Image 1 (tube, rainbow, N blue to C red):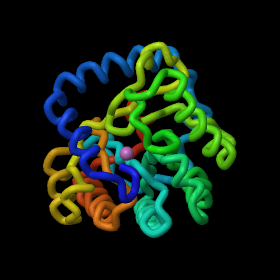
Image 2: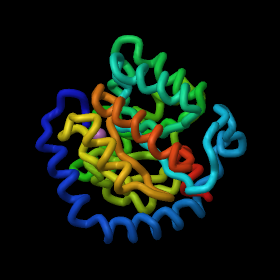
Image 3: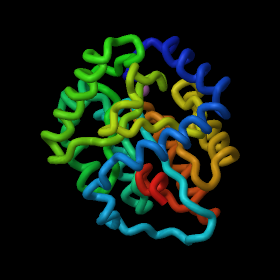
Image 4: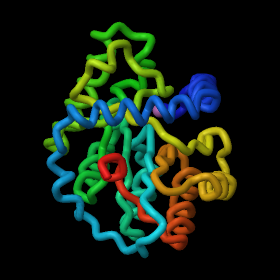
Amino acid sequence: MRVNQNRNDWKRENGTWGKDMQINRGIQAVFLILILLSVPLPKRFADPEVIPTAVEPGRGKVAITFDDGPNGATTPVLLDGLKERGVRATFFVVGENIEKGANRDMIERMYEEGHLIGNHTYSHADLASLSPEQAKAELDRADQIIEAITGEKPWIVRAPYGRLPDGMEEDAHRLYVKWTVDPLDWKVGDAGIVADSVTRQAGEGDIILLHDCYASSVEAALRIIDGMQEQGYEFVTVDELLMN
Ligand code: NI
């Protein structure tokens, strides 16, 4: 969610996902396979070892993802923690948040430190409520802001509220990525509860959803990583997880 945004919007999103999780997982899997066939291999996939990982192999790969940033107060704390742990994450960033303060520096840092940067629209728009042209404009505007910093156009998207734009199945240039584990961190607001919830639910191949705009979520993320690394899981970016 956008920082300080009405949380009712999130109830819609998470309610929809909860009810349809199994169906969505199936649709997601089929959809991803179809899209992956038509998406060119990203440049960085060929050189994934930007940050060396320091975990015991064995339990499989998981991806941890962060929506709605960057946030000037909380995102740097997360980036420090990820760096200490040798973990690469996936960030679905909001274009207008990048334009605030010195937040563009964080996008540069994410890129340099090997994290995968995805598009979460320019203004955290509900793409399903827009015309195809408006939805494209929301995505393109965020793409341009990110590309101006990293030199690379993002090719993965997480649609705000999990609501996809009309005609998305014809968009071969973008991969829409949902999630499989959602601890409702924005609502729970307690690092311990969020971390326990994720550690209980998550396993090989899961995509964990958190929001780096909350201090409690950042703390939870680092606890999740510590706990799951100890169990032998390896944290990878979403592209690495999906293309395996
Ligand atoms: Ni969001």
